[in-house]
Image (cartoon, rainbow over all chains, first blue to last red; front, side):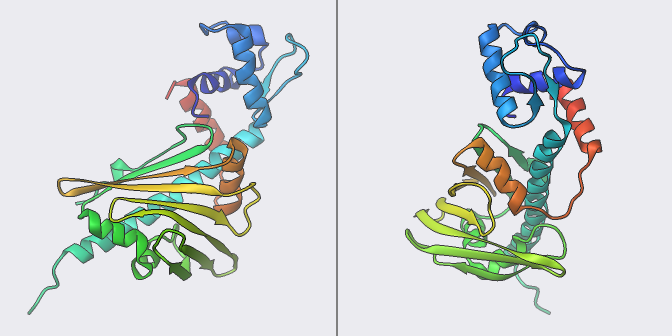
Length: 100
Length: 164
């Protein structure tokens, strides 16, 4: 989902299903180029639609998309929590021990 | 001084995850915190409640490392790999594989430590064999029981729509 075109396609489909022509409309891109992006999203299970029919509307598959963002969020959380702990550790290591 | 706002997790390409963070410490120390087991097991724990009963690191090219995380009532989570490049205290390249990864093959982790004044900036790049492998890897390896539901989907879609 790093690709801006694919993000925009997902955002468009979040508003409701659309045909390839409708999806391609706002982009300065050929329809085959858009179709390529759609294929990537379909392979990832994020959208569904009929590969053979140009006119068949594409729609979002909410469950896989939720899962896809879930792992990134969990991954983020894992590192964020860990790094906060590392801050504390580094600070303890760089502060000379106090002597009374 | 801490820099929590420097933290970033991005997916710059279909096969990679990139993590960035700045630390207020000399580079050598940050490097040690990533490579000395007695330091690693103090912080690389994720959410509350996890410990790291196994943390073995043989820091040399061809040497291996092995981590196991444990939490009461949850199955242990293990991972490990082999160091491909060790440039102290600048760079580490190592393979990464979770015990129960459903993704094909291994991932390759590159960690770069850059010192800038009193700050050490780290960038971790995880390269998977495919986008599917990347996504599946994190699903299988990082399940901490967080139940993100449709709320998250909605906020994602809102941010997508806002062009973020």
